Amino acid sequence: MKYSLGRILPILSPLVAVAAALLVGAGLIAIAGVSPIKAYSVLFTESLANYYGFSNTLTKTAPLLLASLGILVALKAGQFNIGGEGQIYMGGLGSALVGLYVHGLPLVIHVPLALLGGFLLGGLWGFIPGYLKAVRGVNEVITTLLLNYIAQNLVSYLVSSPMKDPDAPTPYSALIDASAQLPIILPQTQTHAGILLGVLATIILWVVFARSPLGYQIEAVGQNPIASRYAGISVERTIMLVMALSGGLAGLAGSGEVMGLKYRLFENFSPGYGFDAIAIAFLSRGNLAGVLLTALFFGALRGGANVMQRSAGVPVTVVYAIQGLTVLFIAISLVLERKLATNRSPVVVQVASVES
Image (tube, rainbow, N blue to C red; front, top):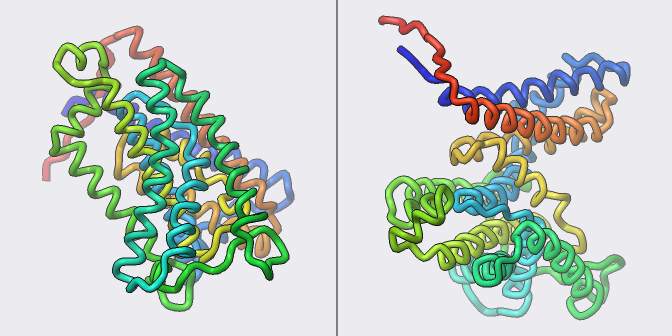
């Protein structure tokens, strides 16, 4: 069986990038005077094989998965949404507003309504740069990046003054109604239904991209907007739609943090999930299953970092260094792939087929 190098590289390069990052991370751990085998054993055993550790991993994975799905949707249309962090904050704000100021609804109505509030406000925050790109030609990287700071500071202002709980010692709102809180899916843990929402969103997006005209339209615009325009596809409308959808998915990540974890709106409630989502989306190479697995990997790193520090004496910053190194190595692999593609050399890798 023959496989071209161009088809194998997109599968191998993310794996090599992760392995290289873990290898360099092992060197950093060794410099700190700790056995890398012991440190990694603690990290992944506690975050994946332990009940409470795995629940913590799922809790961290939920916002990472939803936000990275949003980034991936934008990438499918050739748009670079760097504003996932701001959209997370706006999604959290939208759900908090519904949870705080809409009362008297049963849980089966209040929870979807609060999620819708988060999706719409996050979607609005994605639509703004989408409109500016489609209609005014403004670079979406710049606008989405700047909107991050506006959203974060807007939430900080609101929880410091008009929405602040009168009894709060630090900036945060009052508790949202119990009918607007996401249910816990693993007993005696903080793992809420947000992770199920992320898996459901992954399945829906797979159906959209694999089976629907909309998915074809989005990918066509991403691959060749000029040809798409000749084919009768409205490139401008597609860009605005995709950026709104991208922001809405990231907004749901913020909704989960407010409705399932903290039950109130906090200042600086996202520890950088929106920026991690960019790395996850690029590392997955446009594959939805890859997004799910990579988000779980990053969730395990975040979930096991504190345990590794307590049990093995390795600073949490080493985990963040591993994440950064993963991004660095995947960027290097993308550059190498582009060079190979420009060379157009007919390199073929022969793989022996095994007959059963």
